[in-house]
Picture 1 (cartoon, rainbow, N blue to C red):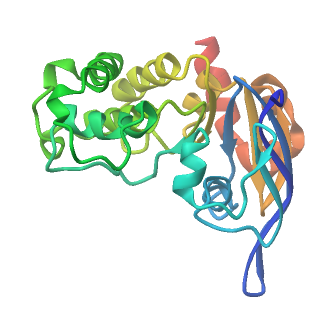
Picture 2 (cartoon, one colour):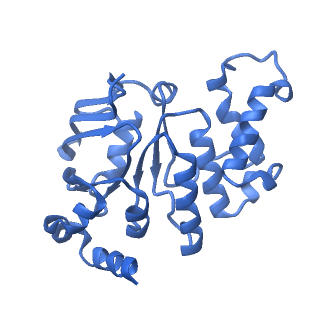
Picture 3 (cartoon, rainbow, N blue to C red):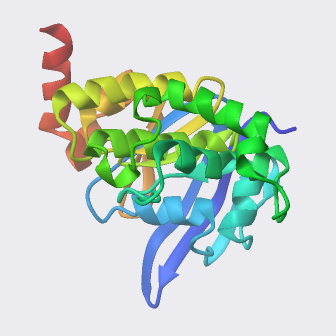
Length: 258
């Protein structure tokens, strides 16, 4: 198996005459936590959509553990070990916390298109669901409908659903958007806990989250990778500061030394 979880090879995406992704090259090692940052309209969400199969690239390749996945459907990519969340919470509002999580684990445990089993009798699926519930700190909300959870709890549930299938590569699109500072701090710790041993890619605008979570940062500007380096190196990169970070870097540095 490749030592890289994901590889993007001269990846490009155009919509009509507008080139949104302009030759992105990235080699992301297994187990790395990568934050993708950049100004609005830089192409970050488009990049996520190309990686997860929602969009087909105009040219170039996406490799998952050395296997080319561009051209495959999102569910096929998911079954190969890549899962993602979205900016807008995407759960089953009329199912309970337990039921949402159990849906996410069934395929990975071999329960595919069979309608001859009662879910309550699937001991391995139910045990894995209980484990996930505990991991995301929602075990006390087991039977609560997802629609009745707080916003932060719904985001935590979506994280649980995202990792429920056992994906080795997890994409989180703005996971802390709309959260308070206290909720964000708790959520950073939750993400760290549930992605241990996994490769993580996250799009995030909150620089405190980025510098507190990521091993590496990729700065995307106008559809190109301006920098791909450690948080300290990116923070010190004058080109990055000029193009995007600016005062955000100073704010983070001040917070770290306060």
